[in-house]
Image (tube, rainbow, N blue to C red):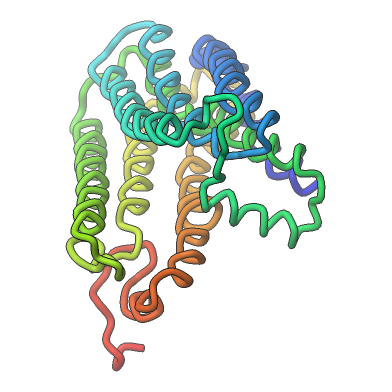
Length: 309
């Protein structure tokens, strides 16, 4: 029952996307794309190996799918529609190419090759135990399809609202939102690069330089800000579609737009992001407890001193 209740908000938003005249075509094609992608790239290999990690391939390529569907189903390719599509393509390709290279490097797609679950999904198994979930096969499929459902519904809302608003001009608001997205995308990339450079130097301690000096997870924070930028970009289109959409459907779409930010925040701070990462960092790095005490977990801020604590 708890698992079904967690899927219900996504399902309601998906129904609203299919019922709204401006988004139903894009939503229908996206549902098909996500089902095929997650079945082939995650659900089947996950069933065969009992590993959730394949979803890290399916999820970002699902974002690519949303970007492609938006481009192909939009009534008119306005500058804003192209901008939101490119944002999804960039986010998806950046993570998708990395995850595909990682899984190929470790032989995940070779029959009989040993498979190692990613740490965040090893941590997920601890949650299953605490919550009393004993059926591993069911739990693996739940984790995979929860992310698939998110791609098919809530996470597609900004793109499909913009695509469903073909008369929208490139306004100051649109430029501001897209600029915020670009800046956040660049800063996420910078944070990842700084972490890679730190590791390449052979350092065994905790990376606390550059953006990592002000947040323990700046890459996650700026990934979240990219989604907030897309939410802001879609707000004018949501308001424009009010007159052509049945009120209950419009209300669910508005709630879905808000769920984009909330879903990514919970995911990046608790579900598969900061919390499992820090669980293992505390065990591998003796200085990580000090880093936790002096540096904000998610939102960037000044370094704390003992007097601040």
